[in-house]
Image 1 (cartoon, each protein chain N blue to C red):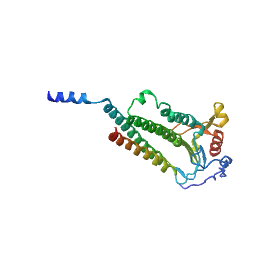
Image 2 (cartoon, helix red, strand yellow):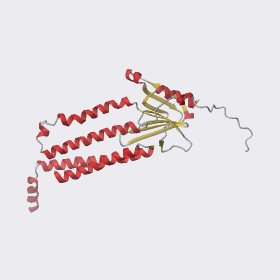
Image 3 (tube, rainbow over the protein chains, first blue to last red):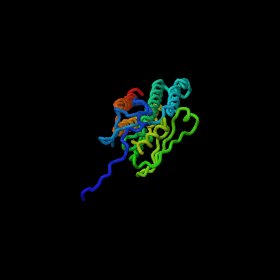
Image 4 (cartoon, helix red, strand yellow):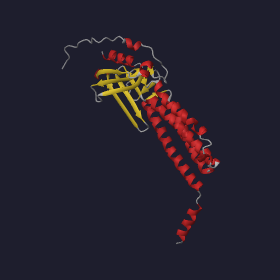
Length: 197
Length: 79
């Protein structure tokens, strides 16, 4: 059937104010605006990444501190009887084994931080979660399906360093997406509201 | 009966350090499996989220795997 009438789109095509906010372009940052050298598997040709967020750098402190403690453990326990009684060959292998475990621990924790990201494009929101080595979850929702966006900043540290959770309620297959401990949650909420309006 | 005596003779010759060597080899073998899974996972993560850092992350994961194989070989030779 021929189209008799087509209403002109009244949507404002001007870029939302929140998109002009400053952010880092560093790939190791937690709040990367318009990353140039990042793309994701299901990205469409006409889709542009506006924002990539991952957990605030301060959330890495516990595992970095724990890892540093693990690094000095062999130095502290060097003369511990159970180790000192071993032949020197076994002592060397115990130390090598220990540092291999610490190395793997650092690397695993870093990967966990680096690849757990939230992505906001000009078309949708994507939440990529990796738990440990063997579980991954990728959820996405189109911007038009976003129903409600909430920010949660709980506690003194989060308030001082300006990071918290952003909860996105959607009408999509997955009812809720959550970006945990991301920097500037208020900016993310504002961006999503602007994109959705 | 002769076999039984051979077995008993073999078991009595085993030293605690030989048992230690087997345990070290087992532990390193488990670590190699872990390093392999880590390498596969980094590759998979890198395909999902492509960035210019992925090459370095894959390299680190691969080196970890190589080092663990090297430690396994060293344990066989030197322990």
